[in-house]
Length: 438
Ligand code: ASP
Image 1 (cartoon, protein in one colour):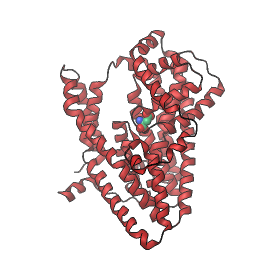
Image 2 (cartoon, rainbow, N blue to C red; image 1 turned 30 degrees about the vertical axis):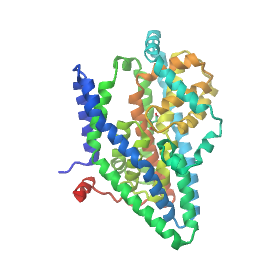
Image 3 (cartoon, rainbow, N blue to C red; image 1 turned 135 degrees about the vertical axis):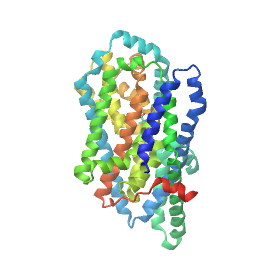
Image 4 (spheres, rainbow, N blue to C red; image 1 turned 45 degrees about the vertical axis):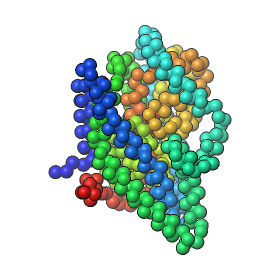
């Protein structure tokens, strides 16, 4: 019997954790894993990132040029942005609710704060530095940044996805506006390119179970001092509860509004979720998210090609929820008084901060600085605050990335349904791809 891909990935993950725990016990274990196992995972992440930009370009041009009129596209665009902002605000509100009920900051002792702030002071200051670099650029810089001045430069940088999206939409719309006979060869080229890139995703995914093994094994051997996890247990638990509530919200939307069963949804999206967990990067997961949403959840390309890449860059429900919980936790632990209006400030700044967070590991923590600064927290306190949560950031990053990706998939289905572009899935068997090649 052939195992479904998500089971293979899950088995790879479990074996990776077990291998990591075993290798940790040997003096040479960490070095061995870093030198000989980790590279497999690194190559896999690089391969996924490698195809992200070509995939966005090909599928967005195909998506737009398949549309018969542009007005449909603007309605998709507008709905996407509005729904993304709404889901982000819901996520932050859930985070605020949970953290105010659980009160995780109360249980942290002064010794723990001291110990953690010593242990992670330098990590915290590097996060503050990155945030300062990002912030020093005026309120409209995010819009200005969206417009590239050189498309080749933009496509050469995975961090410039919004610029690539901007150019591609512009290009796709103009393709619709020129004479059809002239547009045809260009369209056919991008249609073909799209198929090639999707096939690349298929083939890369055959390697996924081994890659997640490598990623998790190296993560486990590199983790230091698990004792600190216990001290931060209530904080971590608050984030996890919040993220779980978000998952329930997504499943409810899919079940009650979209009319698809939870099993259908989770089975369709789980490989992307497992990859999000293993890589902590929604950008690296993007090719798989797009592929799953289109082929397994039945959303048509016109929608996925826009909604998924934009979502990976600006819609981070898990990250924004985490930022809300972390901000309040830090204030509670450091006895920094907050009023009701401060909670509103958190909703506003965490929404902006999650939009501004890059879809890469640890980015959410950098932008947390923006939230804390908006609360008026002085720099020294802020450093201690960041150091406080650093120890558990990676596992929480893995989980919030899962929610980021699941949120994008849910919104893609929602938009697909609302514009009549949600059909039956056309799943392909991943293993058949190899058979085809060989
Ligand atoms: N790692 C997250 C992502 O890529 C961002 C973050 O919360 O740090 O979606």
